[in-house]
Image (cartoon, rainbow, N blue to C red; front, side, top):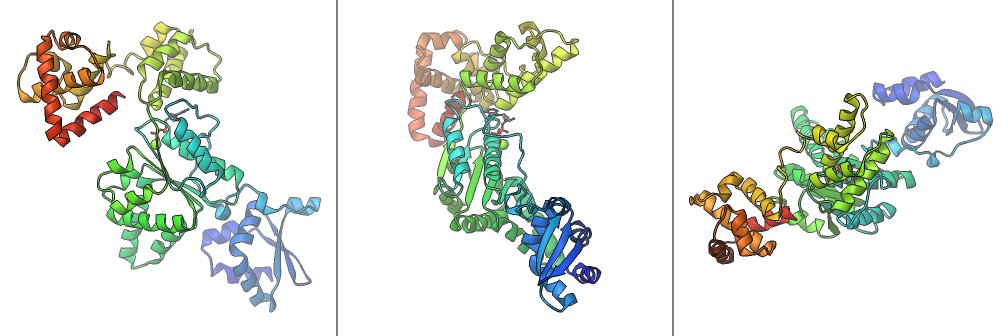
Length: 445
Ligand code: ADP
Ligand code: MG
């Protein structure tokens, strides 16, 4: 009977589905309208029960002539005469692919002032998905822990609520999947793939979509994301979004999406302060379990030189360890670290003071050299950035005019004063310039 059942059900399924879920099952007994079936694992049990039961009952009834209820058992359950409730097993429904990376958790996310709000809102969402803040929108520049927090939310939810379907997806993957499927189905004149894609997204409980700024330009995908968003939101499903800038700053993002993002909570992560950088270094060293001593001054050296990016901080630690290993397991010292990180830190000449930092940032911004900025050259492409830099030093750093003059290649304090006044007037008329300067100031932040 089971073999003719197989013959019938094969026609309804893809080969892979049949092979994976059915080919190793055995019919144990038929009693009192109940069919008992032996399955290889709990995963099989859960999946057959939750996703194939209607089909199984229908096809088996065709063979048996009457409807049976189905019960599934593993070898182990039969041997021990116990039955495991699959609801409690940590297998996502449908063998649902969550894309979550288990190495990112709340436990190993180090908290400081700059990321405290982001971390606590993330945890609040993880504890009560769909209830607290929806959508949760986390933004900040690269390497500050957005992706880490998003996986942490997902991992927390799947651990505490096994029934929830969580999906983590980088936005560009969402876009490319969608575009690919549209292209395919246009060629093959087949709407089924698009339908499946839509359904896949509509049936999740928690959608975590990373780097949403990549949605820009993908018009059809924006439309599809908008639909998905609405559907999930209306069904009180949690949506978590990250971006490298705030919704207002994502140009070409459709207004209606921007409005949606404003419905929930927007939180920014700022670059880590020195203390947080030190704490993260300590945590990473703790996790390495190398046993090699990592002196305080080396930590401080790394923390002072990796300012705006935690990924870079991790890279520096790895390099120092690697270098010590290459040097036959020698002790880690400041000299060794400086040597190991020589090329790693080179791009950023370490600024000797704040004015110097501004000079570097502004010259980078306008693609001219710091030397030019400090020179006497009067062409507009150099003179204007120089005035802007002086303005920032005066207004933002509140440095005195004489000191600014000295750092800018020995200029008179009246020159600095004129520059500051000029920019002050310009920004009243020129909004673009004002924004440009704000951006530079944000980077100094
Ligand atoms: P983003 O997505 O913002 O670019 P990531 O989440 O990828 O940044 O973080 C970069 C690296 O820094 C990751 O390896 C991450 O684990 C680590 N990291 C970031 N913030 C923290 C933190 N607060 N505590 C521990 N590790 C962190
Ligand atoms: Mg990221």
